[in-house]
Structure formats: structure tokens, C-alpha cells
Amino acid sequence: MRVKASEMKKKAPPAVETHSSIDEQVAAFLKSGGEIQEIPKGVSGQVFGTSKQITLGKK
Image 1 (cartoon, rainbow, N blue to C red):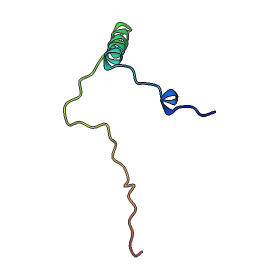
Image 2: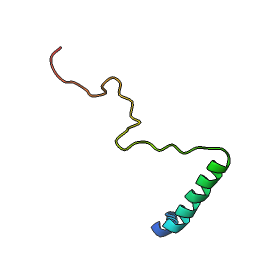
Image 3: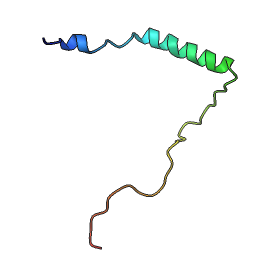
Image 4: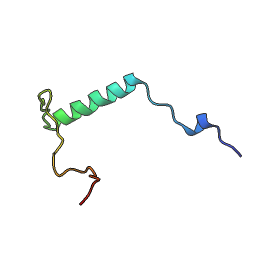
């Protein structure tokens, strides 16, 4: 028996539902003593270390 592709994939929740969910999570976080930090524009959380690029050439 075949299953239709439409039955296999669940439809994403509407954006309004997602927005409400995020608002509730933020409110709970703040109520529990959490603090939101504003990160300045242009700041990255990326940590620079050794290069992961492969260099081809003579040794």
C-alpha cells in the first residue's frame, strides 16, 4: 500500500502560532530571572581558529 506524499509531510504551523509560541517562551524565560542581552550589530559568535581549508600544492 502506498502512502501519499501529502500524508507523509506535516504542514508547518501558521506564522501567527509560531510567533505566539516564541512570545510565551520569552515571557517564561524573563519571569524565571533570565536576561536578554543586546548584541551590537556586526558582532559574530564565530570563533576563529586554525584554517580548515585544504591547501593543494608541493610539499
